[in-house]
Image: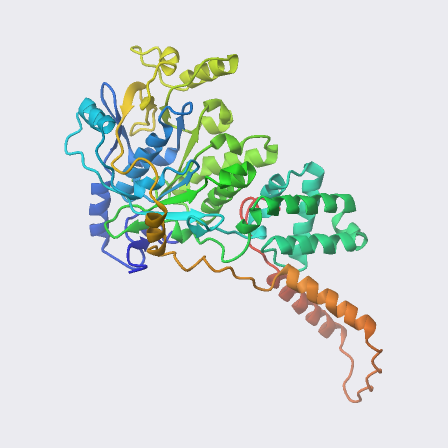
Amino acid sequence: MRGSRWRNVDFGNPYEACSEFGRHDKIGKDSAKRWEGKMAQPLLIAKGEVDLNLLPGMANRHGLIAGSTGTGKTVSLQVLAEQFSRIGVPVFMADVKGDLSGISRPGFPNPRIADRIQKLGLVDFSFSNCPADFWDVFGEQGHPVRTTISEMGPLLLGRLLDLNETQDSVLTLIFKIADDSGLLLLDIKDLRAILQYAGENARSFTTAYGNISPATIGTIQRGLISLEEAGGGAFFGEPALSLTDFIQTGLDGRGVINILAADKLIQYPKIYAAFLLWLLAELFERLPEVGDLEKPRLVFFFDEAHLLFNDIPKALEETIERVVRLIRSKGVGVYFVSQNPLDLPDVVLGQLGNRIQHALRAFTPRDQKAVRAAADTFRSNPKIDVEKCITELGVGEALVSFLDEKGTPGVVDRAWICPPHSQIGPIDAGQRQQIIHGSIAYGRYEKLIDRESAYEKLKAKAEQRVASTMAPPKPAPPQRIGRQPDGVMEILAKSAARSIGSQVGRQIIRGVFGSLFGGR
């Protein structure tokens, strides 16, 4: 029955948000603590000379999975996601190659997995699936994912539109004009309408907001056309995503793995990066502070992480660094997946305490620099020449270092990643649709809602203006007798009331990338 498979976690309640149990299934605190104590055991990820366990209490200190193409990063990601799900931690990850959907189905024996099980001495190994849900910006392979133009904000939107610094400042003014005019910016047609309105009335806005160049308005409008042609229009509108649908557990207490179908989205790298950044910022803005938990409330995997920092404006890079640094206190662990550690800024790289480093190739000077940089990030092991080892690792083999209970990086070890319990490779379209239709989120996002916003209001205003120019002048109303004109104090009181009502009516909530000053 739809809606009966999962429980939502109410992250408005810090205690409930970090337990396995949802708002509809209240249980006693003692019972919840027994579950948490049972489920917060170390997570076996790999085996070298010793078992390499990721401590759930350190999982929100973030992490990195790095390595060249074909070295086993995807399987490492799958193993981590499975382990988090097993202890009741919901997961989000983007499926850029289309092969992570198999995590929703039990795996099956094959010679390579059998060999790995025997090599690592894994006893009582069994195949099993994880509860999963599918999402898709284009609404084709999962529930549609949308946000509003206002929530996206000028900072991220400017990057989507390839705007320079001057054009970014004009876009910020456009958002300010919309706020002051009480105009909601929900979808692209709203933004196009306010741009046209600002361009036609640029002179009247100059004193209050500064110069608005018609050429810049035209550049932004052309950028919107290109964005729509790339499919970005599907991302903006309502109903917007509710983050409660990302933080769920199954009836058996396992965390739901949210998989974004990104094989099509990745063809538009800036849209892909902007979407994941917006989602991360929303988690940062909306989740309450909880400090260090026994386990994360959500783990966020950021695949193809290099796309985040390609040609990124300095202001946006600083905002990302701040979000990554502070989101740990919200109980969220962020794991970047990239081919090369040098793809990430040093400030971000320095915050990634849990590391799985697969093989890197050293064919070029830049490759050799990346190998040295990766080697330098590990706590040295006298038994291993880390720099040499990185180039010799086999498929599924990695250098692994996790934080200990004091938050200190463990000594690096050469190890084999444990095999996943779920299916390696994609499921078929029928299996995917069955999961989508059985989801608690099914039906909430499939139908687009188009309520009154900037486009409709500005269109109605223009129509009224045209109608007033064509209508005959109205006769002057007869003068009323008996009512005295308002006094000075009454006029001031009415003016203040109108001003207060106007200010309240035009408050538009924005995210960390949406606010003019970086906050709600």
